[in-house]
Image (cartoon, rainbow, N blue to C red; front, side, top):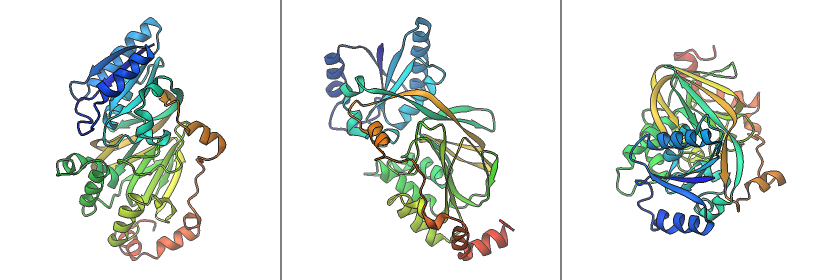
Amino acid sequence: MVHYFIVNPKSGKKHKVNVLDDVILPAVKKAGITYEIHETTGPGDATRFTREVAEKAQKKGEKIRIYSVGGDGTLYEVVNGAIGFDNVEITVVPTGSGNDYIRIYGGDELFRNVENLINGTPVQVDCLKLTDQDGREEIALNQASMGFDAEACSMQGSMKKLPGAMGHLTYTLGGLYCMFTKLYFRYKVTLDGKEIPGPFIQVTDFIGQYYGSGILGGRFADPTDGLADVVVIHRCMSWPIVFVYMLFHWQQKFDFYKYSYCDYLRGKKLTIASEKPIALNVDGECRPVTKCDFEVVPKVFTFVIPSDSTYLSDVASGKISHVIDQGPDCQEPRKSKLNNRHLFEHIVNRGIFGYRR
């Protein structure tokens, strides 16, 4: 097996450790493996290189392992290059500011131990296949969304230009900006053919659990169960309540799912359609769309987790549970009664826009 390290040279410049010279090279030389290092030259190069080496190895009947050395954007490109090749194993050497997908398996420190990645455990994981209104397809290993969180994510690039802004802070700043402009969406949402009534703040489809540089949005998600966790946050409350809810319960405390404004669902196919273009966030990569189908593709990738990760044993022992528990406030009829108390629901949603008449 050849081990390919695809390095994003623009990622991790603020790290005190030189990941390539101080972490990767000593580990591969100690392990005595056959390896190749490829530095990306620009957007899309990781996808091109991954597809190229995967196809070459497939023709030889060989397996390869690809190490995405960068952040979530680099992993996104590697995943989209590896789709369709069952001879490819994928893992991550994190150098970016987010690295959200790997948090479920133990986080940055475990994955920076390259020796334990070389001796790691392969796991078959699910992904999301996304198809927009023009038929363009792409793959998400972690999550995809439309609404407030996608709009905030699309602002992250601008926020990174501010002095001292990095990591989760850039998402928070983007969220504060969108809090005044992107909180009411009237798109049409269906999950496995059943329509979910609006209006919405956001709808997020999870395979993994974390996104937005550390937000635990897919609280109960299992990346191996063949289902996506769909978090729907309804806009049925006034702006001051939304502000507190999104800033603290969504971005900080991660107990958003306990509130009546939230539906935490599971399914295989989600569709969102909008009359005007809105942001689509796919593993941190954003672009405008008017319609998108999100479909789970079960066990399509082999992802390698570190040999010292306790994730698999914690799932087997029950220490980690994927059972959805939203609490009593999200059960009917109490859920509807709580939401009906908001004047915003009666005046704006039902009165002005005619929702749920």
